[in-house]
Image (cartoon, rainbow, N blue to C red; front, side):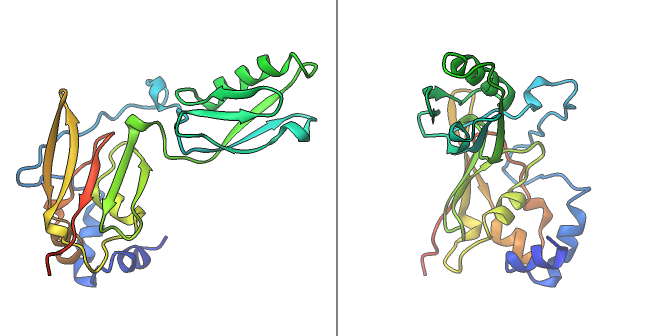
Length: 215
């Protein structure tokens, strides 16, 4: 997506252009929002960088030379998928390679030396790694958390605010230390006025709640 389209998708004026240009060098530091930058770990140093399957993910299971056993499948809310011959298999919490190997073992009872490949077509990630957007977003949804993700990233992926949104009364609901924490965010100041200090960094499991305007 081009820079002009990103701005247009959020209803952002060109006066806010410095916001987008500054994002690559500016971190979040919002009034009463705590600064908690996520760790920057390389894929080589951190096994958690390997994608882990979660509910809502769209997978394609390919069994070599067995088209009747191959096809697309969505991970159900209970974390399982249904595979011909095998039945229900727990997919959540495993990476695609682990799931493929497990399916090979299960299919070996019916197919000689099966070779299975699991491809993630689209994903939202495991529940504890999801970012949820509810309320007056154009497309309320669950998103897969990415390292360094900010509230502006979330707004872009959810289509921005509706015309009924009270952007400056939005909150991030965060589970921290066993307790719920509510962080005020100023979304209207961010996307309409280009106030980069309102670009709060998200954390895995956050829920962004955008209320409706009173009038």
